[in-house]
Length: 135
Ligand code: SF4
Ligand code: SF4
Image (cartoon, rainbow, N blue to C red):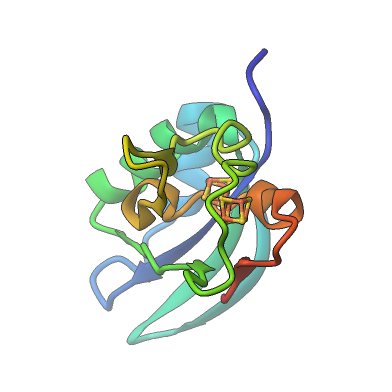
């Protein structure tokens, strides 16, 4: 069964894109709601922090990028390799395959897979508290 979660994304607007109705255009064109958590805008540009349903996130992010908006890809999960005991408990729970178990049975976090999604499911799954949200 597909796991559903909210994708947290930062949209960055420059002075060319800030005065265009891009957010409402994307909502209308894609037919999906975007939950805006905060917005800071002025004539020079601005940022919108928003949550999007995981089933729609990919197409919404693509639509913003096509309209010239930068979509932030901050690293939001950190893995403490000192605390991790490579138990594998976080691997199967990750909907993005961002945590993998290699042949030497070491668990690796692939930040590029997690970026922009950051559902936090792995944080609660880790018995060692080796994974944490940092943004
Ligand atoms: S927060 Fe954890 S479970 Fe969620 S996508 Fe990132 S690595 Fe995977
Ligand atoms: S659940 Fe925690 S201790 Fe286990 S492999 Fe994942 S990060 Fe390491």
